[in-house]
Length: 277
Image (tube, rainbow, N blue to C red; front, side, top):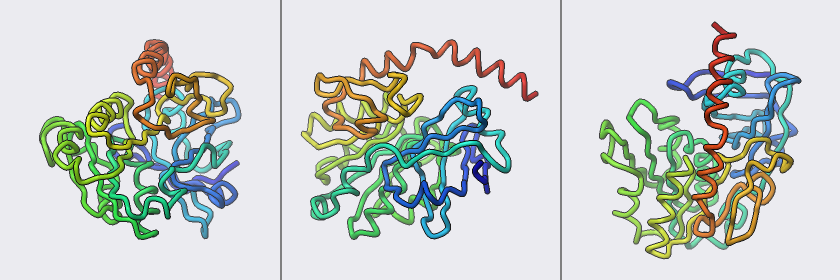
């Protein structure tokens, strides 16, 4: 069992969890993920690492309640059954600092996607690389960890669908205004957002990295749910990723697969909500 020090609600459906997991964070790098299980009979949930403290052995996670498994996770109080990791490959830029030190980098975060963006931007700042961040959400009250991301970003630009904060519109609106300033873009957030970012950056021939963590289910390569077409070849986000060249991803296939079990997921979520009432 793993001791849970914090599992608190951040906004309408996002939570922050802090877990004692010294062996997990010992070799953790930005871009990697862990698999968590609330109970022995719970489903496995892959979550990208949001932050970590290697000296104290603390693992920080941010997740959204979008189904029955994450609802169950949100009810965890003092301890949880399992934390496995770090898994997946680290972010390409963080892993090859010297190669990218002269590059101008921009990160595009959508919603809870700011969670995996933060450790990468923090790591790059610590290694002398200044990074700009474009952060979008539906409305002002849905932004997460603003104070933390602002401390590590060189410049930060906000966009909201309803215009309640920053630029009214999508992250692509802001990105296109500044796109010629950058040599490389990293986009992390909803799959449709990453698709739209890649459609834009491809026009400008701007190298773009995306994280396919949102399509992961089991996180071990066994279920096949996270298979995606990359440059015409089948890859698994949990094994070969989670990050890929965004211009080589077939986003249409990924989006279609994500919708296959949406109705069943909502039925299961309602059943579990009833159990907690």
